[in-house]
Length: 591
Image (tube, rainbow, N blue to C red; front, side, top):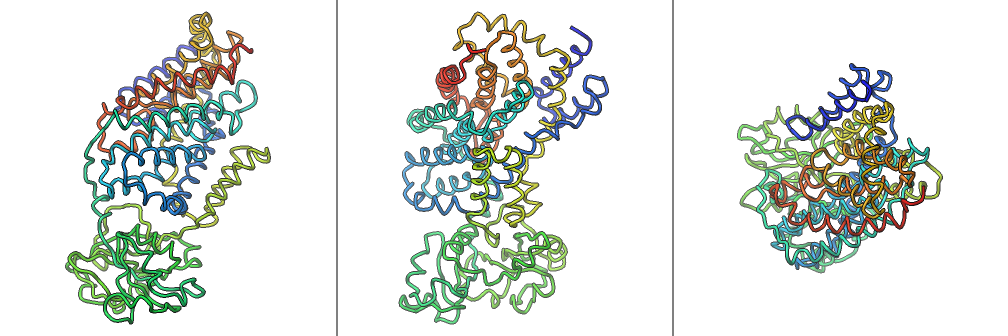
């Protein structure tokens, strides 16, 4: 072993030890090792930040932006709405949500797919009385399985593709993972659908501020725009769109209460509606009605970041006792009042006529730079930051169409993968589906820094001959084994190492070694690389090996030891199904 090899191994061992210790953030550990590697001469100084130039960094960032844009579009919620009404039986909720997140994870990054569907699942569980802990863990595991199907579904696939390109000069294509991934998904879906009958994890999640706010009922005012399909139709048809979560209170100008069922709607009718803010937004989007209080139109939004936020009217607020019209909020402060929530009473008048009181919860839309100064001057207490739906502009099909266009361009060979997804991500930003600030929040910066910092160290182990040095003993162990056992061993290694590092770090460390083993044994490296990717992507035993498992831990109220109860049998199924599929599709014997 040379000095350079020893230093490279020492740095990697130090990184692993710090990952396991868990007192420092993963991305900070990776940056620390990167700096030490350059100072010790293991990593060339001009290669220090080469990781950020790797295609995989931009593929992951672009897919995360696309996932967030699809979530904001509301399209999935509208598609699922007819199905959700029939999901009162918990026995059908797990297959429905697990199947939906599994399918979506095949098209976008799995963490993004899970984040899109989690709020819908939590709301469905709350309405049906199902413990949310029964839904979220199967959904998380389903997202991991769905990510196995395409190149962009999970980080290990993207990283393994990069390793293959450095070895063979050709990366994996978008659907090269599908033959193995689809088989594993099918087996995993069947298990998750039936496991609910013998593995029940009932936990009570802690009540978060956001969860408490979700139950607040707001009153908003909607208007019938020009050329609306509702013009000339009876009020009863619009009223039929209301649900137990959304109540049409009145029409401005009509007698107190709801108008007669046969009253014909006309352009400009103002309708007072009450419900939770997210449900109000869905109702407005479905009925294609406009928010009367919204003064920030598209031409205004094009030049500035516009934000929707909540606040509480303070006791000494200048708004106390004044109507919205008297307060001239937009003219003086640039604030558009979208909705008001008042404890202990129903508001049935138009927004501009409501006299505000201390304790009223209000939803405003304004340019981001105006909100802080306006809230301070008006003595409005800003509430805890949470995702708001009311007043957020949605683009329906646009993000999905851009994603489909990217996939078609890749499959047809018109564009490289990183170019196609980057173009789609820029497209959703140009269409103002989301602001730049929201795009940066959607990107998992810590994951990108972790990958970019570890890539040069992984390259240095290969460049110094360290990977080949480790590959020798490992090849001696795997060489005599039948192909099935060799592949299964690598899958198990990936599963075992991932909880202590994380899936991205596992692949960066293990994949080059697996490729070197394949070279020494003169076998097809694809089989070994696929095995590492599957193993690293399937951590079902802990909440820390993959971001999806971490994401559901809090909302589901899970304890660390809950994961293995459902995850251990699923891990055995993955090994049992993936091993023969990898051997059949990628035949290690061909070298």
